Length: 228
Image 1 (tube, rainbow, N blue to C red):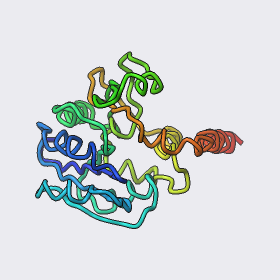
Image 2: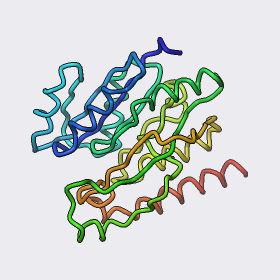
Image 3: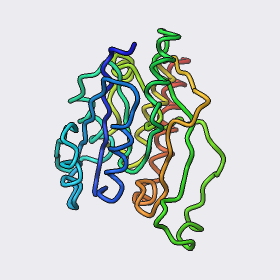
């Protein structure tokens, strides 16, 4: 398995503050070969300048299409047999991809492999802001785009990420993956650290949280249709 190219897609929108650390955590992976593709989804800050500090990272700018559209653009450019997504502010454990590729080698029938996630407050936050950003301090099973490694052909059996929803595009994709009976494995180790701060997508797009309701209803409707 250690000769398969893994494509890492990092979608970014005005993420200059944390982007360098995120890219560094991808570059620090013990598994090789990987390619790293940053999709700049219409940023107006210094995100492009941050990426230029990393010559091996591919950079692509596009007009703003939302998080689903940015992820799709990265996957469209990706050349790897395996696909991974890392959000602009999160961090990977250095052996994330190594452990996941070992799981694929142990069970070639797997379509996607996840790992556990630990959330943390970004260090620069004051105590008052930390108090408002509540989170579960326990290590959680990471059914999250950033903790997944998926076979390219399995991803396309499910299809592209939704580009209409402002939030929940991965939940929509994952529900469709389960409906298509993709085989998955959850590793017990912490493979990703999810940074909490004041401009997380889930915070920035607070008005779009009803998207989750629509996504769950659409999945339920599909399941009911399959049963008839």
